[in-house]
Image 1 (cartoon, one colour):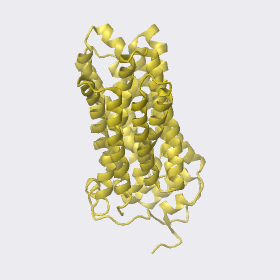
Image 2 (cartoon, helix red, strand yellow; image 1 turned 120 degrees about the vertical axis):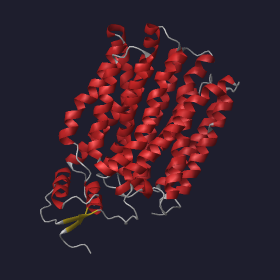
Image 3 (spheres, rainbow, N blue to C red; image 1 turned 90 degrees about the horizontal axis):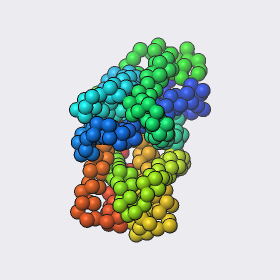
Image 4 (cartoon, rainbow, N blue to C red; image 1 turned 45 degrees about the vertical axis):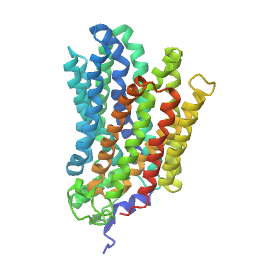
Length: 438
């Protein structure tokens, strides 16, 4: 039974206002996600220059383009269990160091084989960063504000992806494509010392792993900027689990349905998003739209997604998060059908793209804020990272089947009307998730 000298960390954080150090943690996680987004997107901006300089075909360069997504999936799957054993801080520092160094080394690759290997290794680090920033931040912010703050953190991904585009436009004509990779690798390495000194370990992880009270007291007092000398013991306010093996927790009674529905929702969501963003510019160009116009219209998906993420996150903190996410997916399905029926050259195409991005990307980001609360601390990073890893398979499938559908004669209307089906399935799955119990 808890006494005056025993502190429940979950209740303690939930009942307090955010301290300056907690806001700093939000900012640090935002920066990690921003450099992550930058290095994920970097190859798309420099690929035309590499293809021209090395005089290779686009299919030959496909090996390089596909290496990072595979690394991302593997990195996400491995990073969760590692984080639940070794700690969020250690894995995050290692991931930032890893993708920074590998991006830097990619600038000195001599052929597509070397570059593909380095991009795979870069993907391992990138895949490890996202689930651990999500997990660490969710364990240090009040649950009443968690969805919105995690969504805010994830807007850093869009910012980083956009930044690298402007950076490539400025650097490539003067210094060549290698300079973009050099800067893209140096930025996370410059961030690394700041993370080393200011990024805390999760106090809830330390409790779950039976750390002594002194180091827990020290880190929690520093992050929450309060005096905790009176506390002699710490608890995490969670139900006991039957096993200490993180991956096994995901399939225990009470968690198995959550796990399957989260995987289904994330997989379906990324399938739709990646097929849309990967092939929409090509379809627009084939329909007679100029390249710059197609790029600008597609960019509106990211703009809509950024605003949608903040709106969905805010609503999730106010009402049932499952219903909010499900509604966003279902409205996204409606927007997909409407965009397909209106056609590529309609006057409303920009609005349609914005609405699809608003609902679908907003729902997907909202899911990142929702997932950490589905698992106990001992398996939280594993649960989040496996959801992201399985979802990456959806992104790979979405990126690949777009070309297949186009080659089989599918048109714009048919493809985007069909995409409404996985969007609806994502909405149904997250509603089913609501019926599960911890």
